[in-house]
Length: 242
Image (cartoon, rainbow, N blue to C red; front, side, top):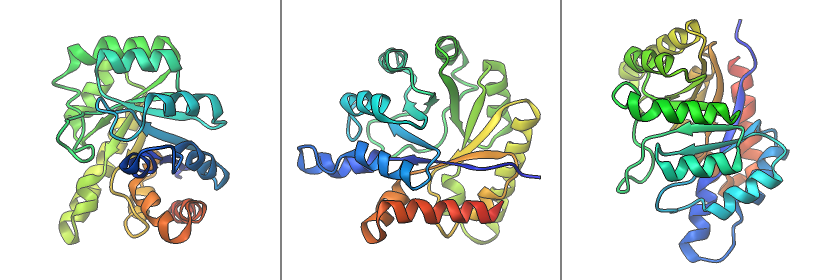
């Protein structure tokens, strides 16, 4: 039987709107607090190398003001490691990052970057920061996460979200198989990227998945219905799937 499913709300794109004009509004920290009031179980924020949305000041305020866990998405760089160790978020999700991409495209190659990631995973873990690796639903990447000692993987659902018909069904099976393999090896499974009201339920129904991280869609939907409504509706869909 599937256990409870948590929702992490990514507030990056509130900061994107703020930064489009400059100044302090809309405030991503206010969005995080509203999401928490609406039932979000955690807040995710990606501090990118070029600071295109979330800023260092946002991370400092989120760390100080949130009563629910903060999940810091970060590239595997010395700068981001130092920031994580300074702020000590509940979790750090290591993601690939390219300057030219609009959003994170695909999972990190944990298998190919073992030597780079291993000391980072150790240092974050020693600081009581729960390490997650954002990976493709691929047995090779699951094996790499096991070898690295990462307690959590977040499966990239972007390909699933972009497909339809039989191709989507096949990708859903790939996600389910990867989730089962990770859980069998003692790794907690999260998932995210591209999830909406229309496509979330099949992923939420995968019994080994413990958390979904969703941002862009919820922030966009909030323009029409409000952030609290969009978060509550997503939580309801996730609960129904379980």
